[in-house]
Length: 219
Picture 1 (cartoon, rainbow, N blue to C red):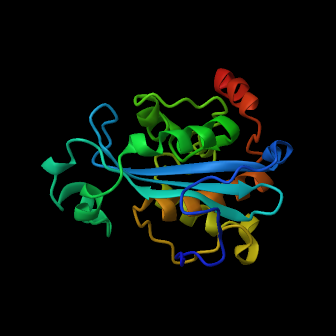
Picture 2: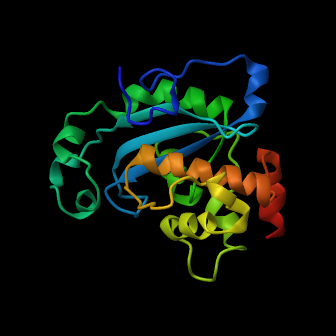
Picture 3: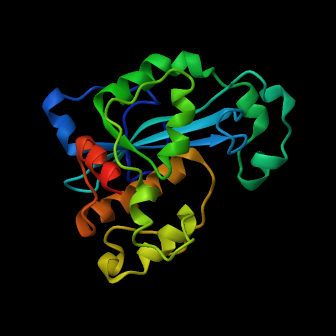
């Protein structure tokens, strides 16, 4: 089986292989989704990618990567959300349902700390579908709003901004000097993981999901 990211360990075609429980403290997961719109109450999920980040080494592993079918996708064509990436709507229409992955996804969410670049959307849309996130962490976008120039909060700009900082000497954390956002769940999650590793090491991003409560109350 061949995967597009040869330097990243793949756990097994989207099925989580559980680690010994004490090892979970070393890992954080990054989730990214592609949807038909940014209106979380109406958008359909079409793809989910989840990356495991080893916060001691920066090593990344693919936990989950799948196209998702949801009822109503038949009403969409290859324009709109599908025009900004190489997502093939015909493949999405043939994909497995979100429900078929529920057990696997919830197993990840129950055992791993999790964050994303805009959890208010990425996690909220899954919560609307009944998923629980007992170890939800600080939102990366919310955290870096204190660092980025005012109004410049999209992920593409954030990656470019942090890539060029002295904290990223010789691409130690962020590796893609020609980064262009692909609007594909897995690729986006991989680059978010790189940014998170830098934030943890250089900007004291809180790695405990309990810290998230303290930060949010004080912000």
